[in-house]
Image (cartoon, rainbow, N blue to C red; front, top):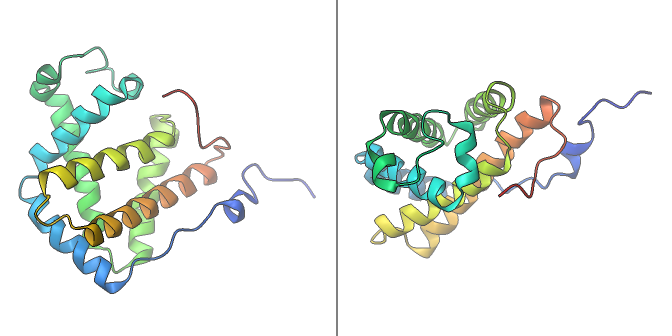
Length: 179
């Protein structure tokens, strides 16, 4: 029997734990505060991401040569992408109690980034870490250790679903030393 590329890799990937009801409530509560300032928060996340991981800019011709965080902050293209990132997170949080919907949303994100943009999937894990840092700093009043754990678990689920889409599309290597 011929081996299909990517076949069997799903079984070897560690499935992250599903969110509890209490964790879903914590995530939705903190997100309601973040969502009111989503544009600024999204821009902050992307600027930190690109400053700390400049290799990620290679996928963005409009701002790949920008070095100055203030220039990035003024970039209409960066702001637009930040909005898309925050809207995707919002869709996940809004549908957090519907695993099939979340899987569908993140599958579309993963497929687009794998096929159309050819983004290395490791950048999703890195971006998740940056998002957790920024939320923890900007919303320290409500980002308790329990909330941090819930968000970390959510970001693990996001990465799991996105990389599942990459595997479906034939990506075999899910990590790289390019950073």
